[in-house]
Image (cartoon, rainbow, N blue to C red):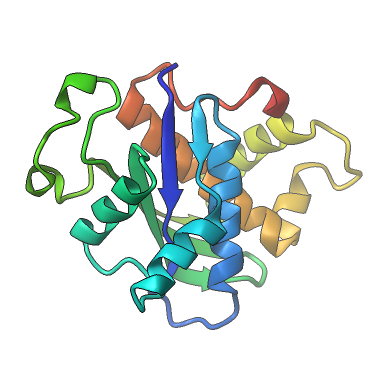
Length: 195
């Protein structure tokens, strides 16, 4: 599995909801990224401090995402936004995740590429996770087995009953998709401890 160090930009709220904390969502995104083998995450407080020094609270452009990863010597900046948020039964979370990397970590000879050549996300994934959708339920069951098997008396249902757990599942699913595209079909596997 290739390895990459990533910076996580503060999660944007593009939804009409104010029912969640974007800072907490950013922490959850960083936490879920770190669950995957080969992915190292720059501490979130460092990236938010770097933005604050520039008088910013979020990443506003692709160029800014690239500058942020360069500031930490990272391979990429991950930018995410919540596009829909309904925490009540059935929960619904809409997410978009973008991977901005000025270099392709699979091809180190491209590390000198001009930032303008990489000003668009290398990979982008977007999805609405509605707990009424049977494909979402199947994936939640898979996620539950990976995380804790049958340790809970609620089984997989706890991931639709607890708001934070449902958000974690949603983020994990998109991150897995992004990593599979970025690194290939064998990538995007959780760490052994996550099995």
